[in-house]
Length: 325
Image 1 (cartoon, rainbow, N blue to C red):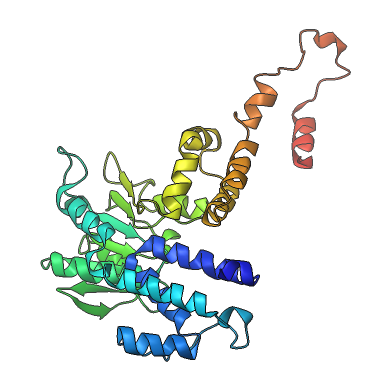
Image 2: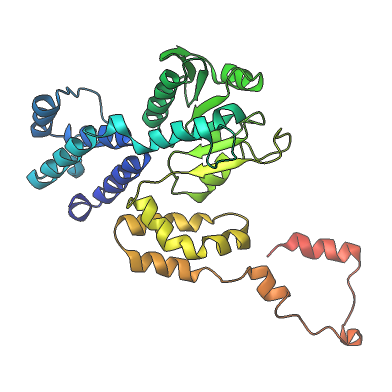
């Protein structure tokens, strides 16, 4: 409804889907924030959910997006109602605890002992998970690495603010073996003492996913193997994208060495139920590495070197390479 009514509505609808795909709590917070755009929505939050919403919003008060229709308000109320009933029993959190305690296979070690970083795109998801884990593992310090001055650690459910540098040091000294981070932790952070990674949500920009993996898959990693576990809710946008991409993901990764950023648009297409457009974007990608197509499968005719006008020496080759494509 919102995405069809106003140009900026598509962005907000997509954002809501992303946040719901992260954790139930993050989706609930976003739906409440959107409800609070209108006085009617604020009354619903106060009367139905005992929530008073006074925080500032970074969207212009005169924005057409904020002029929600009655149908949109009713839809958001239903979303908040559904999510609020389930955020204390989030299946992603339950799965995270199980993996930290038991690993992912019968022969696997507990990931809490191997050292684990848990990634989310959103601070409220990260804070919620870190806090809950600290109540489950009351003998451990659970780190929280985030942007700005929001980093710190939990011990038995109590948060202690720390600088990001202090958190890095505590990980290096093995004082922290479970670290929860936003994507602020996906760049410039070396975590060789941790050998497992849980993606609580999947960023729609594939480069972000590669950056997360690069925190533990690097020179100096102390374990012979690293393990990565990606989470997604059944029938979510992420799940539908995976179903659309599943046949080609392995080939695409083998071809490019990573998932190309152009596939971010596939997520958006699927979020808008434009499945045909998503498949078209996938089909545009070459079935083989373009370098191999040009230089291995279609070799130039070089049998008769005498037909060459001249042969490049080292200096000539360097000049040609500097010209670029």
